Image (tube, rainbow, N blue to C red):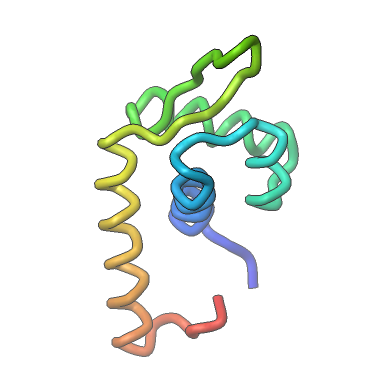
Length: 93
């Protein structure tokens, strides 16, 4: 089943969070199963909304989740749980 925009944003934020709050862009792209073009579009949107930010660390570029991004992730996960509870989403998604 295809993921919708909300699922992709939730997945991206969750991957960054699970990697300690920051991740290399390439690892994020592979981990979230997005093309380079898709990832660029999603990350640009999330940067504009202050959910993530790009940082330089020892000449490496990293993508870091912000406090605002953590709050959004928490709400998105609550929404997923609600959808599962109400039978609107299957648990294996």
